[in-house]
Length: 146
Length: 146
DNA sequence: ATTCGTTGTAACTCTTGAAATTACAGAATG
DNA sequence: CATTCTGTAATTTCAAGAGTTACAACGAAT
Image 1 (spheres, chains in turn purple, yellow, red, cyan):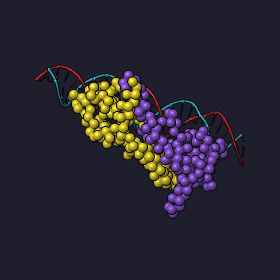
Image 2: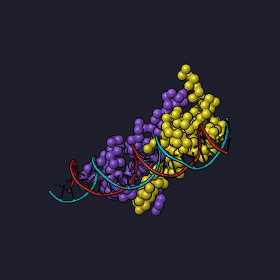
Image 3: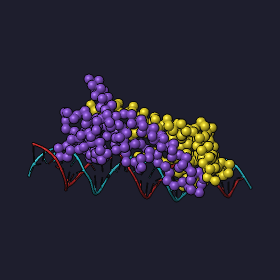
Image 4: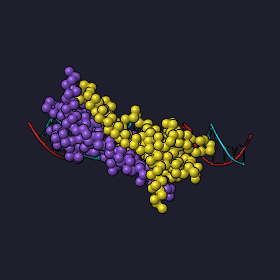
């Protein structure tokens, strides 16, 4: 199983908002065009980002405002906003090992810490990158195209 | 989305094999009892572990042999054997961003490295633990129960 | 050689979740 | 109040995990 593409879509959204905010009104329709998906998908993701207090959305007129300086929003913040995964666990444990088996009743205790550590390592890596980095790199990369 | 429980089941299997090998014949039925699932599920996972050359399975008589010293099998080896995830990518990227959009045609280049790094951090953490560690900790923990 | 206990696998169901789509009500602005 | 968006419900499609049944293939013991 993979982590949903809504996460990369969310990062794509932020990049578009920054890149286009002075030239176009950035609506869900506009974003859907760049990302090549359905506007409703975009709106659902925007709602998640809004619920996480990362952005503000203007109704009627349309338009997205980022609530914090880009340098203070990490990939992890976006990841958490998007992944409503069951109590945040990356690894899905088999539900009901047999408590009458010595291995079965201890397997959780044996593995939980290690799995959490692996998940934590991934998340810490996501914390290293901010939307500010992403914006800068995007501008550089697009500039170098020409 | 979460990583399939087949991974924790696989680790459970290895622990059982080591813990019970002198007392019981460890068959897929026996394992299914400890893990509390269906024997066919176990057999499918065993087949994956066999294909990864981690174990040998005796037909007819039943029984599982680990092919390498436990200290030379890491959690990552088991993870790779179990997760047949599309070209090994943890993060699922949205398929077809618009190539006519400057952001759309560059988003992959911008994110791929960072996502790989995050995945790599998680995998490196899994590489730190071997089945030998798991066996020892299991024996300790079960001994401390009494 | 036959029987018996296992494994290997196909086929099917059930459930869940992502993604996409349609439709329309609600809100803001000119 | 008309226009332009967002918010959201309802529905469909698709893929994958997990579980189950059924049975063929295999190996060892008697």
